[in-house]
Each structure stands twice: as structure tokens, then as C-alpha cells.
Length: 423
Image 1 (spheres, rainbow, N blue to C red):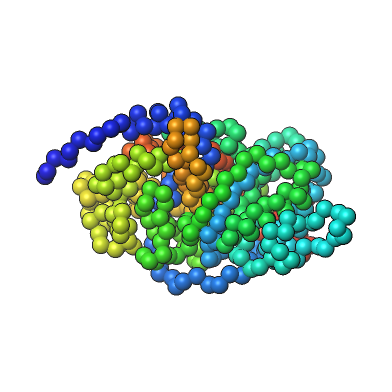
Image 2: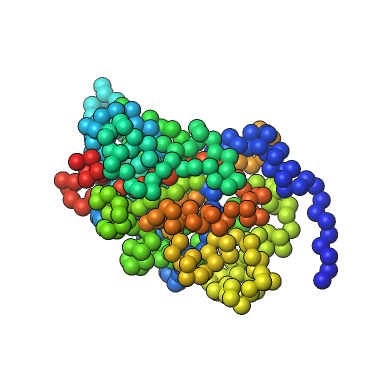
């Protein structure tokens, strides 16, 4: 083989250290595991349907499995100001009522000019259909001694710990309530955010937020013509769980009765949010062969190395020594495709973000990684354990996020989010 020429310039460690000393650690983002994580083989699906209003009611909250996946996303984390069970109940009721109206495109109330308007006016007198979904989760901190809910805490819900390669900023991490907005246009997302904040301003205070663009990342079936790319330039979402497979969702995403969880959690899901800063300029100066070896896929086609099609099985048993796909390649560590690792599949639904540049003039870009699973220990944390020390860590840095529990859905007009928790 021809020997590779030495790479010129700063080392990977040197680049990362320089970025951190110049303020890269203050970048906002969520992530520890790239959305390159392999899951289940999808089928091809046709183009997106037209924009519509998303149904609010159902056994599960919309926004985890709804298709099409909107192109704009925003994660907002809030802290609760109320200190009573009654106050928390009121917050959940107000959130439910506002979200129900927003997702249905309910026209704003008309008031006299002597009063402040009841909405920002961004969407005009009639909000258009835009596939808006709003998803609410609770952090472990809600189950402290404020509301008397300690004995109702989901058994695996904890404050997200520091994991391998993390540099979590406390100001960009955790929170009492996570709310994720998705829609086709950023105006719709911003409108919904401001309406939620207007409605709950006495009880919810924004802790941190990040927005970006989804382009279909992270959930559902896809095709080689439509698979989006992350900001490392690789196809993202090739092998994710099929959200149309109810059995697969029950097995890997939705908490089930009999799981040993508090009764109210059935139909909910554990949510892992991580902000992954990507050192994209240094990545862009890395040889293509190294990029592909780090990921385990061809950059242009998305095919597993040595294969022809994006959706080909990487066939690890035929490559036991890692001559074709290295043993420490991202896709191989994330999902070795063994009977044991098949129990660790997660549903990803995140988005790319770009937030300007840091104090050293380096681009502040990355991935808002969001995953849903029936079990944190058997899902995200199991995958993350396999990824600890992977070579790709040289190019990425988790700087924020949190663990939350997504409340079960609302199944009637007389119900509200979390009613069985606080009742």
C-alpha cells in the first residue's frame, strides 16, 4: 500500500484544546452520541405529504413518531417557579390547553387596541397548517421535595451525569421541563415558543434553548435520495427505528405496564438530549479516508465501507478483524448488530444547529442529538458506554443537554398532560 503523506498543521488534540481555551466550551448544543447511530434497517418511503395540523390527542405525545419530520426544530429547557403540587398541576393544565390550540391552528383571540395583543402576530390572523408539534418532558429535579412526587419518579430518571468526553456547561444543561418544538417554518416555531412563554410566564422561566434545522434527521423511513446529512457531511438517519412499526415502538420506545415503573408512566418515554459541538474546520482538513474510517461509511454514497448501497447490511461477521470497517468505527461501536445490542436500539429525532462562531473565530456548529427509549440504562447509556473512547471523540464535544421523561399522551378533552402524575 502507498504510505499516507503526513497531515500538516495542528494535531486534533491541539485544535480541540485551542477551541476550548478560546471559548468553544461555551457553545450551546446537545449531544454525546452522533445521530449516526445505527438501529434497524428501514424501507424506502415516498415523498413528504403536504403540510397539515398535527393531532394533539393520543396515547403518546405527538412529536416522537409523527411524520413527516418538520424542517425546523427547537429545544427549550425551563425551570419551575411554583413550589406546590397545585401550582405544578396548574402549569401542566395551562401547557396542555395552549399546546392543544397551537397544534390545531386555533385563531388568536381578538382584543381591543387598548390592551396588549394576545399573540405576537407573526403568523397573521389564521395560523397556517405547518406540521407543528410540541412535546413536553419532566426532568429528575421535578421529583425532589417540592411537589411530593419522589415516590412517583420514573425509576431510571436521573440528572444527566458527565459522560466520556463531556464538557457540560451547567448553564446549558438539565432543567425541570423540556419542551421541543418542530414545524415546517421557523416563524411557526418562534410563534409557538412565545405563546407558551406568554401563557406560563409566572411559573416557567427559560433556562437554555437551542434551535436548528431537522431536514428529516432522526426518525422514520427514508431513501437514498432523501437521507439528510449532518454537519460532518455524512448521511444521517440511514438506519433508524421504523416509527410505523407499532411493535418496534412498544419494544424500544414506549414504557409499558409491567416494566416496574410507576403506573402513570405507561405510554411515556425516556428522552436524552445532548448538544454536540463539532469541530468542523478541523474535520474539513482531515483526509477523506480517515473520515470514512472513523464513521464506517462512504461519505458520498453513505454505504457501509466495502458495500455499494447506503442500506446494505455492514455484515460484521464477515469482517471480524475490522479490515473493511474498523473495529472502533462509529457505526460498528454504536450498533454491533448482535442479539445483545439489538436490545439497545433507540429512536433518534434530532437536528443540526449553527450558532455563529466562538472567540477564536471557529464555527459554532453541531448536532442537537435527541433520543427516545423505553429504558435509559438499556438504551442511550448502553450505546454511549460502547462509544466511550471512540476515535471520533477527537472531533466532537458534548457541551449540554439533559435527561427528561416524556409524559404520556392526552386521550380526552377532559385530560391534561401529567394528570395521572399529579392527581
